Length: 264
Image (cartoon, rainbow, N blue to C red; front, top):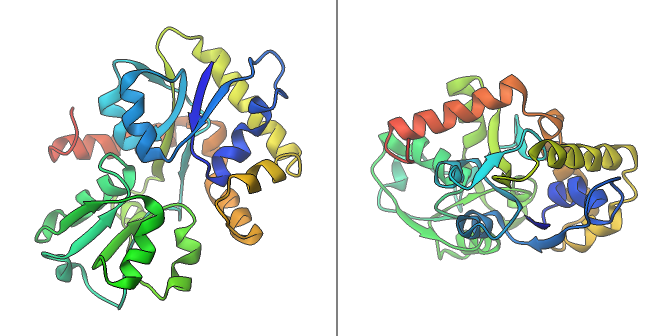
């Protein structure tokens, strides 16, 4: 079974037990580690059996994949940030060069929904790791960041123009749907969801078991940032989307479709 997810601490924490053969009845998968912008694109080929993607990419993947009810990333207070070198305002983004981590990321979809009332910016898609250094050096006027950047952006001397998660929660009252776990159609999705939940349960019950694996893939994050990352992005929605999670996804994609930003 081919499994793909990011090297971020929340994903490696959740999938550690499954990847290491600690989930009874689950096949040990062949793992691909890739940032979500990469999996959003590669999932279009159908090469993965189970894959982590952005919720924003779902409209392009529904023919080949089913959404699983667990393993993803939703929550509150965990949304993407718009950063600048100096304190600024949304109006100043008109004509500015803004670096974003991917065209079909939830972060960029939230940015597009938020910025509909402003004059357009010049968008540059760049690898996530280049965004904060690029803003700090003046290569970009602003940057859209995700993941652990909310804990580290001040280390780069940057200012937060907008917390798009706070904006989303004020606008809708819903949690922020960031990352989804999909399974290729035709597979036993109930079984796969059970393996993911068992892997997550093992991680919560035995947090030290996954520590070395998480650190290995954490891209030089400090232990404290890694811990904060897991605590923020691995939560009750990781175990089950539930009605609240599904409502958040439907609201996000419904609004985006109405605005012509994604297929209906």
